[in-house]
Image (cartoon, rainbow, N blue to C red):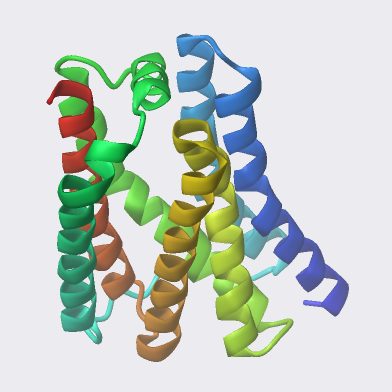
Length: 225
């Protein structure tokens, strides 16, 4: 692949998720539109890397490595961060944050009644895997073709956090939205490090999955507590 193609796919990879987030949390205010666009965005995040590798790289069908190396690190980091998030929520943030907008947006996207359980399972099990596949296996790998591993970790973590900023600012306002986005950035940095160190997406997915489960537990308390 030429350097020009490398740069093209890097920019596309970093920008596309943020465009989707801006659309279904900005322009599309109706529940059906937001849900449809969110679903389309997940499908595209799966298909784009495959299409690029096959059509642009002219490579064989891409396979993601699921080695057990680093699995303990993934579980341990997920548990530590997940417990920390729940503790901070109940000890601090639950009493000072206004969750009105979060509840409104959650209802708009279908996080209500029994739907919450199914959506929480999807986000915890499926969405976390899709994001690791897209951001670590694809985006981070492509960035390493352009810059050093350390710079690739940093840039991919910035891109990963940036597409969450829109969501978090919508929910919590500018100050807390930026604070929580920095937490997302640190998560992206950790998972990029895991992928670079262990050459496997498995520890990244496991860590991400456990943390998302903690976030869903917090979300349940916010919406129904």
